[in-house]
Image (cartoon, rainbow, N blue to C red; front, side, top):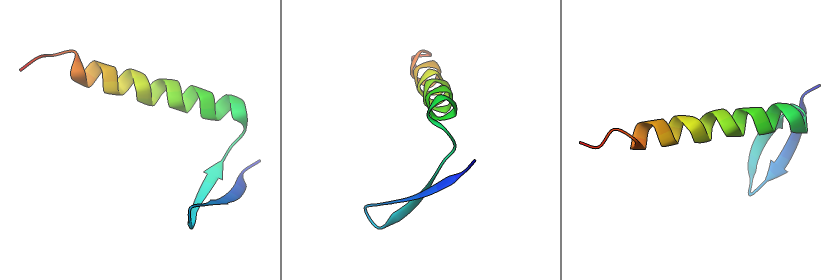
Length: 39
């Protein structure tokens, strides 16, 4: 179930803590992957 939360005048859709943690880990891994290859 999606829940709308108001934070800093912005609306965020939070879909469960577990799903949020998975998305956060995926985004963090993506950022690390982008930083790994040194130009």
